[in-house]
Length: 204
Length: 204
Image 1 (tube, each protein chain N blue to C red):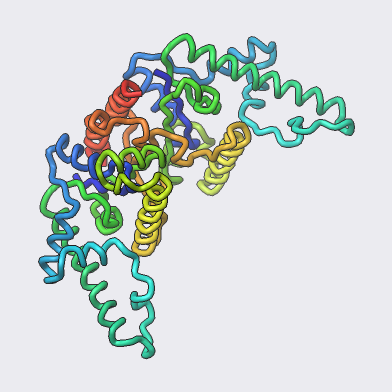
Image 2: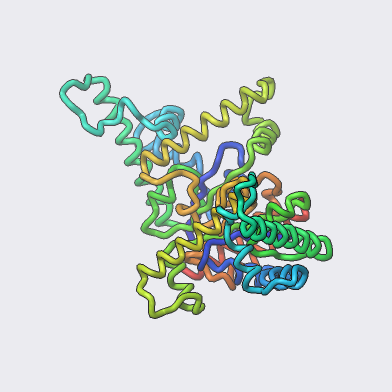
């Protein structure tokens, strides 16, 4: 049983992932993946995290010509090695045990294993509220600035997903279940969702 | 507890609606609404059904001018009376008891009651299979013709929804939960979904 979770920033995707893993008695992976990639590539955690979360535009060697600088080639190689290492780590994790993996295009990377694919989203109002409660944004910021920051992160996630998978992030066709957490207590709906997943993955 | 279900043709929305109603011990409404509207307007069931499911384009009196024919005025009035009767019937049903209502823009009509809004969808391949199994299409038709017919019905449902609500049909923002039935047995996932709904509506 492999469950992948795509999620809008502030929608509670990580919380849902953890609760589902707990309810189903399976492993949960998120930042552990970054740590493993960092270890395997001998790069710093934050640096790897940064590479993984950003869609490389200038650096990515789609069509490297002679005009590229050595520096760009170097950065491009590093992007490549981090991403291929991440692919390897995610595939290894999924081959070893049932698990929930949050983000990282895991739905696409693990497509041959037919994971159960969830997308978590919510209204902007609910996202602001959740970010403030969870301390994920500087609460001294105005709502306008928080909205700008949420939108920017989601745009980045969408671009990253589309760049690596060729599919649209958050399009219902790419997921088995999409859950709106605007009015829901994640703690309370997790048990029912775990049951849905249990039945749906039995059936596959 | 009011649950509304929007659904793509052939995705099993009606089956899910019935099973949820059963699991939650609440009423289920679908064609009963048409029957009630027909009774109240003294029009034939099929005629009412037809009016309800089609978005009126020519007939709808957005801006009736003197150039309109009497016939069009007559048809427009009938559209109006059927739709306002349907609104009344749906609101009456929902005010009387907890229920599941399939289609009919019930999510919009009942928005003040904050229903739990579900959208059911699936891949074209799964829809063809389901339609054939359920005898909802002429099985002597080629797959190409079945696809054309499914697409046409869904386009009609989308246009109808957008015309009456001003929102986009099947857009995740308009729903609490979206479920892809391509690989799922509806019978098996219904119990878990009922639990999700029970928790989510408790929380509202």
